[in-house]
Length: 83
Image (tube, rainbow, N blue to C red; front, side):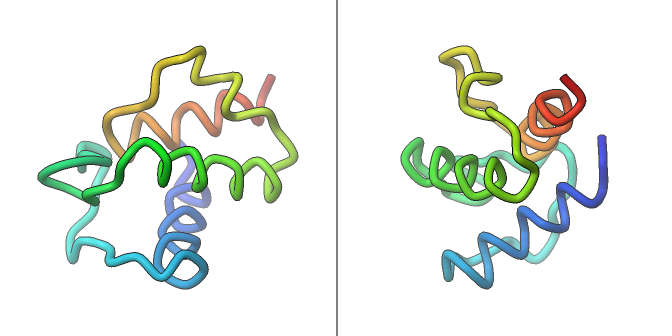
């Protein structure tokens, strides 16, 4: 997993999308309930913003299944970037 992706995603959530970010975030932090509290639409919006930054097709990399944790999200972005 690339820490750059995690940091950028946190910046997008906090500074661009104006969403609250949990005080402590790690690889296992859920994107939904009990973590970030994001719904599927917000996860897709975040994905699109990272697609633009990293010039990759992240949504296609999800293959119809949204990631459940912040780390899984970052891993998929990283995998799409390396493809």
